[in-house]
Figure 1 (cartoon, rainbow, N blue to C red):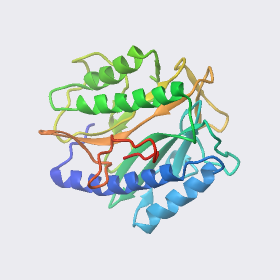
Figure 2: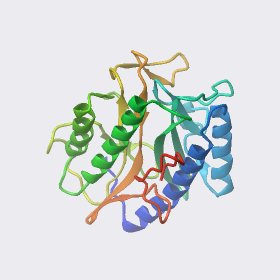
Figure 3: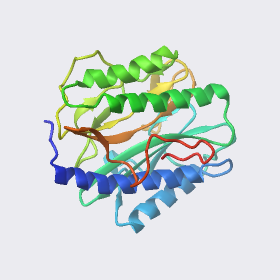
Figure 4: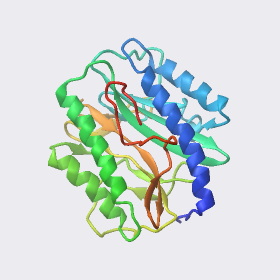
Length: 265
């Protein structure tokens, strides 16, 4: 069942979304060669709690950490570790979630570690653009198929793989609500979008083949061919005036990226 949100509900989602985005931005600022993913995780947990929130991921379905830290060929759900040390040329998807007042914020960004190749930089740029196009399609009267088609067609135009067995989702007082939000689809097909729907749009795009598997830790999803993957996500409220990005710090455009600062907004 899809739970439509009121204007007051959306304000609650903006509050938790702002904290989740700030945590993500600061996590991105920590990304550099020599740092462990566990260090970033510990910082994010402390930051969210210090500002009155609860890390949404920690304990969710048994997940052991406050962020997902997915490096290179890891698509999503990477578990932070003291032994996972970032090195120059890596990329890392960091997924943060903050719960405030019972509402859940969820967002992710893929960051460069030091200097990355032009090939990988292009993958990140296209995946970020896929997110922007998916958001543009999130208007009343469109369908979930329109969002998925916007993401899929742009990625495939550039020769990239689109992960189909992991998708975006509805969000509100729970991390995962109806409906599922695939990164593929056909125009004008699927559930019709209505004002009050709140969804997380999260393209997962691969440099090579999108086929994937879960590692023995039962969480981390990796590409079968070892090719790098990028993952970008924002939480969106669909309103009569168009999509509103709730995972956004006041005064920032969450789709603007200054590559020099490696920032998420």
